[in-house]
Length: 117
Length: 112
Image (cartoon, rainbow over all chains, first blue to last red; front, side, top):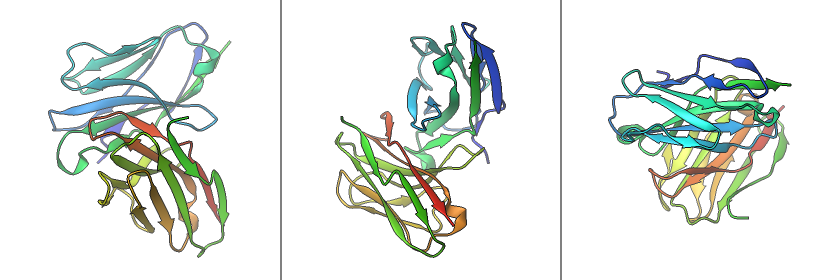
């Protein structure tokens, strides 16, 4: 069963606007971590932001923030003030704390973001 | 620069050929991983090594073998390449199951 779902295959956003990338996850483990990665056209995986399941506050890193809604199992990425360099594929990923998935990152299918002038 | 180094960056194989993808990290991380990335499917785990001396299957292990040569190096071997193994392969490492992950730059493999 798919554990990470990203429902937006692609989206366009205008420069300087904010954009929200959706991510829902499925786990019964109370201990888990959620990650967002950026993959530009050059192909490397760039870590953006992390949210732990026990973190009380939403994670923020510069222009990136994570809208963590635990009850809804949602971990949306918000990019404020989009820049042309934000054009990339964005992946949501989860690491569960126990069981067979211990320590392993599981990825969603990704959302392609294109920032237009 | 500290990080994860993968070689080669590009490779073309004929069906049935074998090859080994190399991965080395210099961050003294315990855990290492091999993922493959196919269009529309995100990254899928092939094999991982939680610590030196241990390896385990991930989501898509068929057709692959791995070796954790030492703490730094984790190689992925294709014994008899098939067109279905055409993909981009990423190696990653983490200090522990709870640490952050660092990815290599990837190997683009084409099997014809």
